Image 1 (cartoon, rainbow, N blue to C red):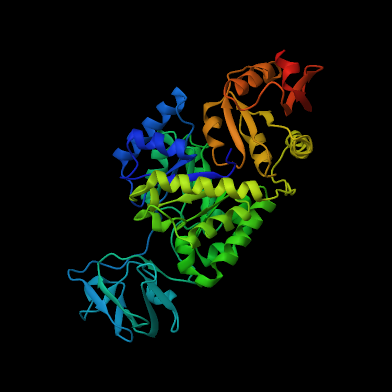
Image 2 (cartoon, rainbow, N blue to C red; image 1 turned 90 degrees about the horizontal axis):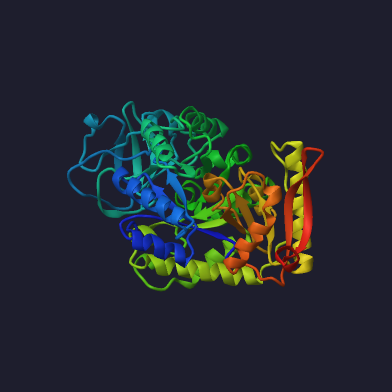
Length: 476
């Protein structure tokens, strides 16, 4: 059973029902909707399909909405533009002041104020880098560091090292967040998070609109986020190493180091962490990955992340299902060979009862290893117990039984956690039902041992306990 979770971005290649089912069977746990490109009609239709399939027991998929954020772009121009290395031209904020045929405008209002001579501007994801040579009243004078042919209008612009004076959420992000609430999404990936205030802004918006249950995945994508990495991680539900823009905003050779540091800090705080972008990029066009891509995925798995993500491979790619199967097979191979040490982590915002359960979960993970147990069984209403368990990187599956439909899907990102829906009033009386459900699904057999973390009633109070259970002793 694969313990590392897979996120697949959904698009024209995969948004029909049969493709969604195929992605799930291939190993997908969460579907991502990129709202830099997605439209409401297809997103709502796909969300409705997933909710129905989840209720029918065909799938168990979480839904993630990725916000657009206030992107910085070049302006409109009619003709394709060509640049050679050494070309000097101007970049304006006001498009009406563009002078020469090679000049560009940029919609970042503080471009001239915030950029200094010697700074580099990256256009079209670094395909055109320009060096700031001089500053004028209405424009920056820049020099092309390399050439590009047939550049279209409205190209993406990155300003590495600049502390951008932009809001955490644009108006469109707020509309999209409300859409996520209406459509029952489990996660929102917040683009270009720069500090904890950005996260709180989204959390307040969700709470004001009845979406406090939605978990926030903070995307670390620029230098300012790296500088505020600890506070971002502490205040997020999960973190994404968004290597696309991050690899443009920082020197590309430093990207693996930043990835390692982000993952390490997330694990030290027990926070879910995702690695994304260009993992199987070649499989957009080809049925087989490069050796380097396989090594890249394996490296993320060695770092023991919770989840890995596919983007263009499953939105516009020719081989979306094959890409997922490849990623799953690499994960299974890695998990078979890696040693999971179940390192401890900082406890942030836990109640005394949660802290007690964290200690029990830690013991359960180690005991399960020593016994060769086939699973750890927990009961959770909010998913908090499942998150505590996943952070220890358990070797055997953690079967998290819940009576809450939202918890059933919002645990889909957690390493090693398999949620099972089981209606109950008080879980102290349903252990036998839970075990029978695992047997019926062929997760365990009657001769297996499992470790159970649950509550018992003592003097009318719930008391957390840990049990080592031989299955046949419970079901007879």
